[in-house]
Length: 472
Image (cartoon, rainbow, N blue to C red; front, side, top):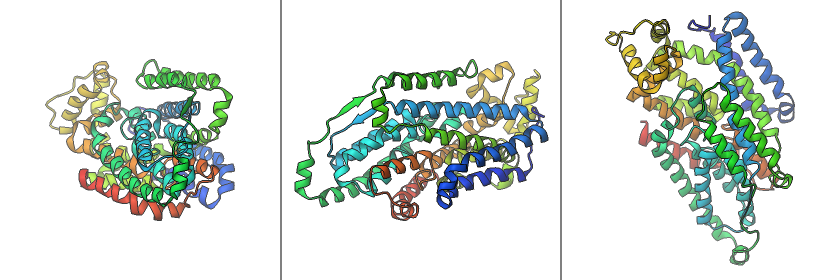
């Protein structure tokens, strides 16, 4: 049944919902037990779905396609994590509000090169050290807002949801071309708010302490800069698609080379270990497996949800990204948008005809068919020439070529990245930053304190402003 349109039972979405619920609530309700048993939960629920697709739907091709996407995803995330862990930055001890603001701006830019995970792991320790004499909760939270989330919306490397979109066929530079205005508004607004808060905090510190700290303490120092070469290799590999798995092999090789050539002292200075990426790898095995029924069901039934609007997709994607993981949320709404704008049931006959060498009718009375042919020639010409069109690419091409569909994808992309900052569980780096800050004895708000003291009064107005300017 690999060539047929899959229509899984809606009941099989249950393991996906259950796994996301466990990820969201497990660390809060059962912290010690969850850390010990989360591999069993993720792998167990993933196995249930895989058996259903293998034995119930005979969809081995769908399983293989998902497995390839998972390997590509974890190869990028893991290699960036390892390489960033081999670079250690020592900074001067004191930082004025303007210096702090510039540091966060640089972090927002770096997030698009190293990913939000890599940038967060690279910069959080020097950030804590440079503010050590007046470190408060807003330093930690706004670092999460800007560096760990909002800053990384300009490239597919920046945040996991966008890289998954790239794997699905969204052109690499499409994100930068369409999302830079939202990046300026989001990052600029948060930096402005941070500056006001940080200046108040700075002026409250006694002048004698400020004078003592200014220009003293540690000096700027960079160790492990040879890892920039490995970083360049990883970034170059992103653009390689053939032969299969060459991209992933190069990334893994770069990570191994970085780890072996980085002095132990640098890793120790960064408190580097593999536990964070191990947790991400295990959880996402379950997420990638269990989300297959949700994505396939949305492909078939998206039209039943009503007329698509940018506001609906912005707030829908954002609301779920805030309380669940933003990567699968992005994929779910991407599938919904594809199903609404370009229904799979309408495009499958075109896919089969092209694969069989039957010349398509450019004057077809069905507008989606005409749009798909034009869009495939623009975005996936090789598939059209080789008569090997992928159904998802047919749908995505229509989405990208349609002004309304394009705006839906922008809304999904921005919401998944921006709203991931709303809670500690919205995006992977958030919890990593929290753990490191606690280890450094920084004051870190509780889960509810984070939401009520920072998300609602500071981040939510920025999210609403972004919606009002671009998606209403």
